[in-house]
Image 1 (tube, one colour):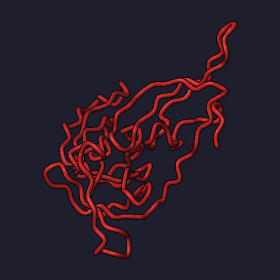
Image 2: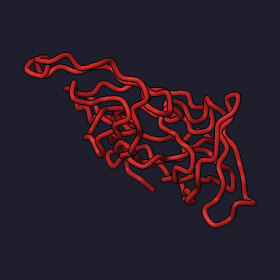
Image 3: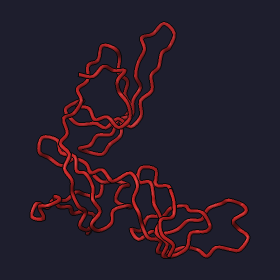
Image 4: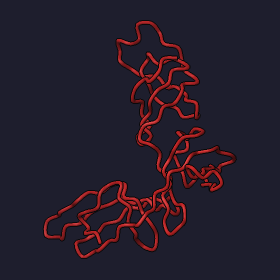
Length: 189
């Protein structure tokens, strides 16, 4: 059992007959009122986000999730197919609304972690950083680097990321999958 003040982002809890991921948690103490933990939760079954508050009398249960290493195979018509590492016969798929914005960083043979609850697949987790090739990029203009600005480039998965001006087409860059931001250039094209 978890106390209300133990909630923090990234934690998975069982609440209202479903599994939720804690996205945000803030402790509030107002005058002449009991302290509360204001949280933003995402339902892993439906993908919906809701805000709620927990008080000191609330007892929450941490969700027992099974983690399984998987490989992304391909995406087709809003369905994304994976198979278990070391067992290519064990294939499964997730719909686009279940994956959400993570789909923009999925590329073939990318290793991910599948989260299972009661034997049912409910979520995939990408590595925090992933290397992707730049496929479309506006040309850099000489002398532009002094401003320290950025430009929008398209990656091999179709995702658009803001990068520094020195990034060119065919460069391989590292992207943070949680924030969607450029981290560094891995290989010059």
